[in-house]
Amino acid sequence: MPDPEGRVRSQPCRRTRTAMTSPPTHGRARIRDRIHLPAGVRPGDRQTGNEPDYRFTLANERTFLAWIRTSLALIAAGVAVRQLVPPFRIPGGRTALAILCLVLAIALGASCFFRWSAVQLAMRLAKPLPPSRLVPSLAAGVTVTACVALVLLITT
Amino acid sequence: MSLETPANKEESGLQAERTTLAWHRTSLSFCAVAALLAHQGLTDGVDVARLVTAAVLACVGVTSAAASRWHHRLTGTSAHPPTCAPRWLTALLSGAATAGAIVTLFDVTR
Image 1 (cartoon, each protein chain N blue to C red):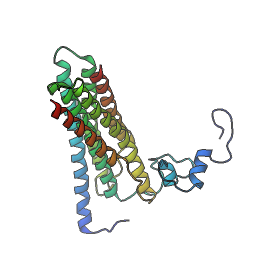
Image 2 (cartoon, rainbow over the protein chains, first blue to last red):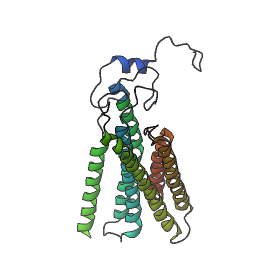
Image 3 (tube, rainbow over the protein chains, first blue to last red):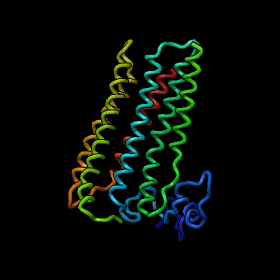
Image 4 (cartoon, rainbow over the protein chains, first blue to last red):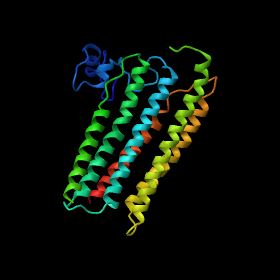
């Protein structure tokens, strides 16, 4: 079937061919490359593979919801710090803490959907679960925020 | 691949119930954040951006509770074992949380 520009492809596009033929790489390897998606398959496509055990599906869903609640808690923390906490001696301290919380909330809120989708696809294809960057990112973000809060408190 | 035992069959209802409770907790979290933003939006004058964000988050919270209840009611029976949640629903939650954080970030930094 021709694409919108009228070209007829006789084989999968370069990106899919690379995913199908090249071995998984470390570091910045994409989910698609690690899971080796067949041609024309999108991450999260329900028609791919077999329906996994419902318990794993529900566990994945609960994990996604936990990440969403963490993101919402960080939003609430950012608002509370900015509005309810008395000003620190260092100017802009409250705003800096609020920005840290909200940036972390944005990162978690956006990433958890792709994590849920990638895990669901890996389960359908009976592949190992892809490694997650959410946990170390959250740990690092909370550590940095706590250190900034500690410095602000000590200097007050 | 799963072993069909009486314990596993009984657990199927518990797994679905745990997931439904998780959806309800998430909906309550959306509503709590919406209430916080609405309270801040009405303090010291009317802040339209915060009120709109609060309204959107509250609607998403109510929608997710209703949609998850409907989905699990359809798929949590003995004839239809639980299946994956709709992709649009998870995308809605993720998008709403991200958008709420972005709007709040702009509001905090202005």
